[in-house]
Length: 104
Length: 384
Image 1 (cartoon, rainbow over the protein chains, first blue to last red):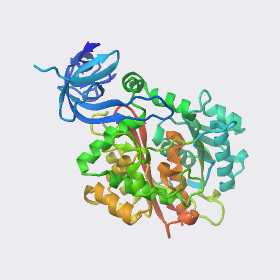
Image 2: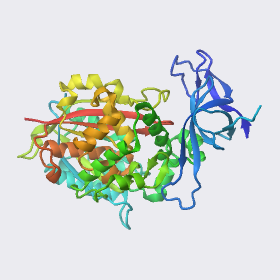
Image 3: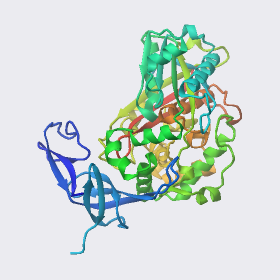
Image 4: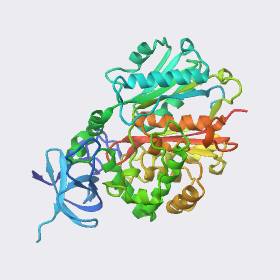
């Protein structure tokens, strides 16, 4: 697990993308630098309860998250965080997850 | 407008929830082709062009299908645009006929993935899905469109019963379609009590995947069998990757060309007698109707209650994919085109809309990451 989610930021206009793009949709620059987004606000949540053909499926929580200074991404929610909550983001391999921020 | 090309015949295979032994994508496509050629009164030997789309034809491609069907062609296309493939193939085929490249052209689509095949497709839809969504257990498109549906409910004040109006109305149309896999009337109580699949989507919000195929024949209008009007496409427009996945998914690519489409067709939304709106999810039907300018004041909930629920406005009159079945995403789009043709030729049997003269058909699909990236719409009419 690593803190934050890797995104790709256009060197020319600064816009952040996830997943990676080949050209920037805004300015069509082709040079990107890796960046990390560590927090986001939960916008919508779903619980995937049934999947066609799967008999031993365990429900999974997913969320659409508006990252701070970055793109909207779909994450696996590891707790009961609800819409409007600012959560911390982390990654396992290429897969983005989120969970409540630790109490400060 | 395509003045010298028209749809002259349609045909389909049976639709089944699970392919039986001996039934494959290829055999369903064969059955649809045989039906469409018979309907169009065209000999296979006369076919000059073919377009095909399928998620489960591989490793075969269009040329393999031509070979297996014994068709020697001078025009061949394979389309990969999912729920928009049928509309895309329609546009290419119309231009193919009009430019003299080929006529008649057979446009065919079919799938028979089975459960295992469907799961593989859903998890490997594209690289973004394989790397960033499937490992989350997103459950295929249901997981994606559950989030889109929640957004639409919040933005437009739509309740579950509003979506239910669409499921119930389409089921009542399906009762009049012998090819539909679900024909038993659906009540609001049953709709609301259905098991949750991916909140807020319940069973009847999720399109049932079936095995089956559809085909249509496009040719010079004078090839149309006597006694029926060739169906002309007054205008057709497409959109691909319209917003780079940076919006909320509640507008589709149709929003980028709707005004131009109506203008090119010389028709207005109120001229439409029958609508075939690509219905993988109820939310996307409302989104496309809204983009087309067919929902007054953008009151999506009111439209669902009054126009679909109470007035049974003729939308997806074969039952839609929601009740008739979705033979893979790509083939699904041909259902709506075929139904529009039958309605405009006054051949839709029990479900015929009286004096149907003008139809709109759409396609929507290819979920890139957060929602679909392809969309298309066409205005169809029977030629005088």
